[in-house]
Image (tube, rainbow, N blue to C red):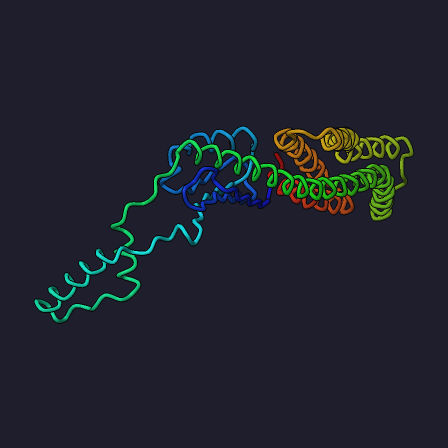
Amino acid sequence: MTGYAEVGLPVSGSATPLTIRVELRSVNSRFLDLLLRLPDELRASEANVRASLTRELRRGKVECRVNLDEGQSAQMLPDLQIVESLLHAEAALLQRAPHLRSLSVADVWRLGAAQQQQPSRDATALANTLQQALEGALQGLQKARAAEGDRLRSFLLERCDQLQQWARAAEGVAPQAVLRQQERFMTRWRDALATLGGGANPEAVQERLLQETTAFALRVDVAEEISRLQSHLDAIRTVLETGGEVGKRLDFLIQELHREANTLGSKSAVLELSELAVNMKVCIEQMREQVQNLE
């Protein structure tokens, strides 16, 4: 399920302004796939972050990005003595190698600041703030995913209603198909007798008609498939109404729906059943793609 959340919290007790910012991005995936991006100062907390995400999430490709945002006062000015030493070193190098590029202001700033001692940071305070920011981001992500889940729930219920209508239509098609088959058989039988010039034996006609009609009725009988399909649809509605972790249960029910639709298609001795079976398969495939996104 898709979702996004971001939370930033200041680190208490820090000598300079410092904020830990946690971003969580989630996209659809059948399984839980975590991608963590933490700065070196927080690398020790990676196991705790992973455990928190695994405890709260079950599915989705989730990216967790953690940044340390320093305030302007934390960006230290280079010490002038260090800058002087850099400039002397630059002059000596340029005398020996005139082809070298001169240092820019940005180069002097970066190299000078890198040689200064960075302010110490409390590892415990960093870890605690990270955990608080992560919990806040998880709550925001869950809200976003819940909104996405409500949309998917409405989508699946609409598809269940559509499948129910097609199932009822299929129930009415089979008896009509049997009657049409009887009429076609009688027409062919009369034409054959007229071609041969002989009279029709009523008993033989009735027996052959019974055999043909019975065989055809067995081929197009979809009562069991329709009954099981409706049962699966009722189960899907119950799962969606109950809520909780529904992804794997719905996966199984969608597979069962697909199996019944395939069986229905294999019995499509008439065009109407074939069209209904194709429509059902398309609808079930749409449901399957969305169900893979649910936890």
